[in-house]
Length: 187
View 1 (tube, rainbow, N blue to C red):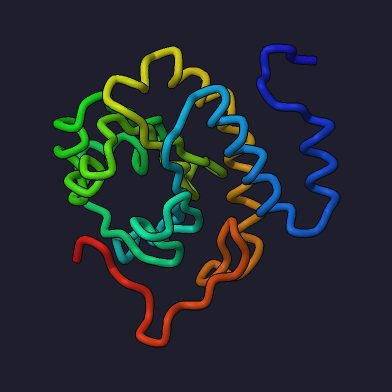
View 2: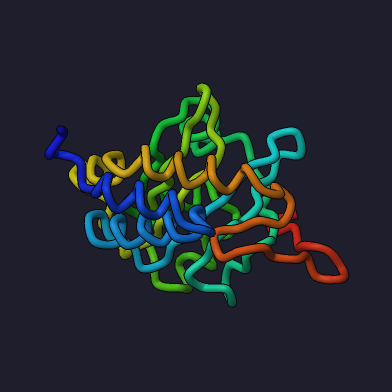
């Protein structure tokens, strides 16, 4: 038994055996990441690389970042690090965030200056990310290591989610697109 893991396998097994396991396991993951890594705003995304966009499947702040919306993906350092290489992308200053995210002013306006994107990887492919925001300077090497310890649970969450309908399922249940369709942020 690996006593270094931050999660409880018995609890995960119980969650997996119950209905809505993707939703409940993601709640457990969020709780662990908040405790061990820290996050003042958490979102999660799945990706459609053919269309170069992500779809938000969880949010702590629906007013700023609604579930179901698409977010433009740009080929930049975030894309190279997370999507292409399957590595964590973390920054500690808003200037670093501004280099890669078109919505950096919104992030700054919400009071954040540090981010961490934890990829979920299966079969050598990034299938989703858990995205954390915190104050400037927050995501240190120790916090990045703590996030990586939760990566297997994140991957399991996304695998469970992707078993359903990839167009509507989220970590809060099914989300129907508005009549006008989902919004494309950064278009």
